[in-house]
Structure formats: structure tokens, C-alpha cells
Image (tube, rainbow, N blue to C red; front, side, top):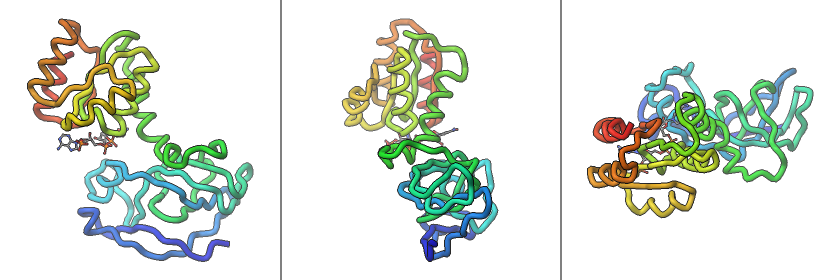
Length: 230
Ligand SMILES: NC(=O)c1ccc[n+]([C@@H]2O[C@H](COP(=O)([O-])OP(=O)(O)OC[C@H]3O[C@@H](n4cnc5c(N)ncnc54)[C@H](OP(=O)(O)O)[C@@H]3O)[C@@H](O)[C@H]2O)c1
């Protein structure tokens, strides 16, 4: 039985550095249909930070432990089909910023043993979002262009890699030129700085062709620049 754990908790919304507290707690033993998971890795997604700030669409019941995804190992199971030591990720918000979390078994997804914990911990949110961006609108064909800003974001990197595999060509804008080579190595077709010079270079590359889709995570002039390439 797990005696003690540690978790991050917030009792009021606000700037994460101000409102998050680290506390010891006793992980809850799983009831029938539940699984106690020992956390191995959990990312900090913008949606996590927005939740703590109180600016996300879904408002948590307070106090709350953040963490919408992550990777862990089954420590104790009250559910059929889940055994100690099995590797799992979470399909729903699961208070993953903790050493342990107890969740319904039907919110878990089993993964093969030996999977890279850091890759597995970020398997749900960003790759699925990139997939939906590229395939969810039905507007982009193989060989066409998509354009995106924040090209080096976790979502942007997934977009680049999936697009490469789908045969869709990508123009990615970044605000730091030192990232260009890194994104090209991931399979980006073109990476430009997110400024007037970069936008002019993208327009020239497209040579009059219109990008099928634009993915904006920045707003303002950056978003306007994407719109002009559509
Ligand atoms: N299903 C969904 O709806 C869904 C799922 C996942 C993500 N998202 C959204 O997708 C976006 C990217 O998420 P992520 O997790 O991939 O983010 P991330 O890895 O944290 O990357 C953040 C990106 O935003 C850029 N950035 C930050 N502040 C900026 C500013 N003031 N001006 C211009 N660029 C700025 C960063 O550039 P630097 O590296 O240069 O700082 C970086 O490229 C977020 O808006 C997130 O909320 C939505």
C-alpha cells in the first residue's frame, strides 16, 4: 500500500508561481473500477497554466491539483484488466502534477512496456491536436501548403512531423531564428522569422499559391500575416 505522496495544489486561481503549493498527501486507495497510478512524467501544457490562472474554459473545483496528461505505472488496481507495473497514460484531466493519482480505469490507456516516458507523457494533447488541425477540416490535400506561427511550439512540431508524413507542405514562422535548422531537421519544408521579411519570403516561396490552412497561436500581426497567405 502507498503510504505517502506529494502533489502540487492550488486553493485559489492566480499566477501559478504565486498560488501553487507543494504538499504531502496520502494517495487514495482505488475502489472497484479505479486504478492508483504512480506518476513518472507529466508535462506543463498552456491549458494547465491557464487552468491555474482561472482563464481556461473549464473551471476546476477548488482546491485542485493540476495536470491534464502524463505517463505513469499502475501501483494498485481495483479494476479488471489493469495490473501492477503496467504503463498507462490518461485520457481525461487526472491531477497528474503529483507523485500519485487515483482515477477510473476507463480513463486510462495502456501502452507497451519500454516506451519512452517523456514521449508517452505528451502523447495525448499535442499530437492529437496536430492531427485534428491537419485532418479535421477536410480542406488540405497532399502536396498543398499549410502555414503556422509558433512553429517551434509542441503543437507546431507535431504539425511539422505529421504533415511531412501526410505529404502536406509546411511554412512555419518562429520568433527566434536559431530554431530554423532544428525545425528543418524535423521535416519542415520552410521556416521563416515571424516578421515582415519572413512573411515576404513565405509569399515568394508560395509563388502565388494559396495555403490551404493557417494555424495561429499568437494573434495580432502574426495572425494577419498568416491570413494573407491563405
Ligand atoms: N486542443 C487544443 O485546443 C489545444 C491543444 C494543445 C495546444 N493548444 C494551444 O496551442 C498553442 C501552442 O501550445 P503548445 O503546448 O504547443 O505551446 P508551447 O510548446 O508552450 O509553445 C509556446 C509557443 O508560443 C510562442 N510564444 C509564446 N509567447 C509568445 C508571444 N508573446 N509572441 C509570439 N509567440 C509567443 C513560443 O515561442 P518561443 O519559443 O519563441 O517563446 C512557442 O513557440 C497554445 O495556444 C495552446 O493553448 C490547443
